[in-house]
Image (cartoon, rainbow, N blue to C red; front, side):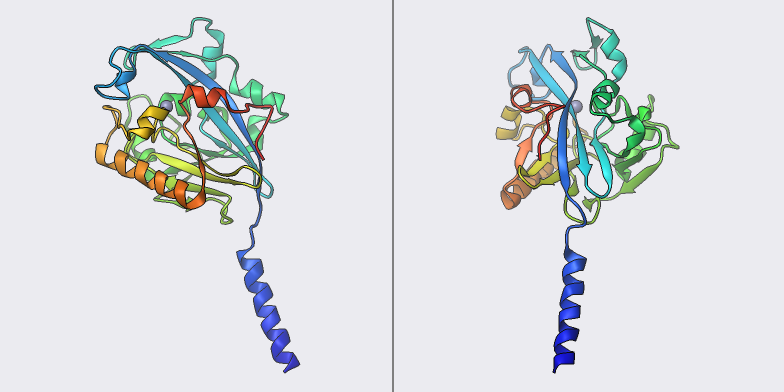
Length: 271
Ligand SMILES: [Zn+2]
């Protein structure tokens, strides 16, 4: 009987070890990765607030995982803009983009070199999200295969085709411990993805990329006219809403300037 008990105990211990969290995300830095003034917010909210200007924030998010190291979520608008005091106007979207400081300088302030960032998750391949991706030439890009394929068909390639990449299809628990879970949220672009982060003190946070652009669009579930698929966009917002309810998660809308301004930015961090 004692033998049977010790055998059962061994089986239970093995199972517990198998399901235990392999690590934690112990720090999440919100990094200012540029901002834009747009002349007409109805580009993102068709028929609503036509001709009304809006300022948009743009953040990168650096996470430190206790056993896998650094993962950077999005790389922001190109660091080159930091040298342009008046920013750069983009005719297609009626936006003037600015950058106060470079991503590399912010990382250096944290004592981190681009080579220390082993993983880069890309929400999608628009320039305000992949602007600095090639500064991290040795990092593994984690992207949806659909986004990779779509990006490489664009006339201006958002990344080098030979960049090391882990291409996924659908949701993915990145390190297999539930700390960082990529959520497939297509619609803004064909392979758009969001990230569910689990933090010990803060709890769950959804980094929604551009699945939604600002708070009123989230409230009213509005889909920008230039999204690649309207039905997918609506379904992705519902998926995010379901996960938020399930996990009691916070939604951090990347381009929503009022909520972004209220958040702690690097060198401060969330635990
Ligand atoms: Zn964007």
